Image 1: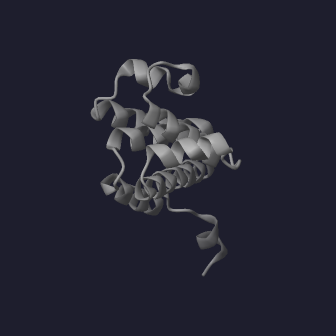
Image 2: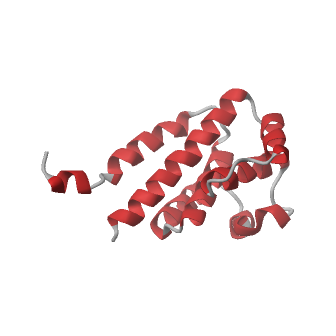
Length: 136
């Protein structure tokens, strides 16, 4: 394999894998909010725009979308959404979940939903980072 082949990342392949998560056990709006927040944290404008469009298509309120970067202080989000966003913050920022975040997530979600949420966050983060690298 040539050196050039190793230096390229086909973002389309990552996106195809990420799309399989759309059929996961998690509520689509919660998954979408977590993915949008992960894209915001990773600083990928293309991914953020794409996730914003998905959120709008799902009918997520514009007021909720505009409050997303300050979700923890907002009354726009319910307890499950806040649990998902706290979980998202801990994974996307590469820091372990504190005991309160872990308890909130374990209380709000089934084991399957939490696994699906974690994978959605991680796949979105990988896609955001790969997309930013491909743009360089």
